[in-house]
Image (cartoon, rainbow, N blue to C red):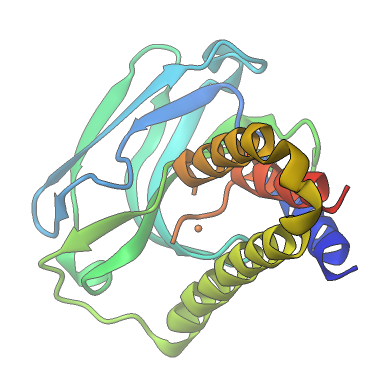
Length: 218
């Protein structure tokens, strides 16, 4: 029952996320070394899905922190860059925008294309969360609360998946080998997803986790 409810929460949270098709951010990633006061290179590619980068067009590119439902803009890296005409930008990280932390991410916001699922909002794409060191600023209480909310969501999702797995292990003994492979595959896909929240928890990651929970319950 708990696992089923958890899967519904994950799916609902995923529905709040913008579609990630179109702009595929290849840098920064979770392991990118970034330093305040130094240049951050942001790279992307067309992932071959709709919308194309040509449709996405000019975007604002910014550094954010926070959680799925409370994304806090910290620094604009490019006010308007046409993602169909170039595939990278470089900008210096302002060290005063925050503190040393692993909850930074880059967000692309289209200046012309609307989200297909939520037309009242612009199209958006996200990088994975990454760490920035040598920062001189401090997060205020509201920013720290947004980060904590993201951590809580991530922990709850992990606990739901883990709990569901422990309850169903005995009943799946006859097909343990096959289901172990499927579980490992689902777990690997969820872990490697971008966005994201300690990643932003992008839609793809949330849906993968939700599908994993539902699979175990069934």
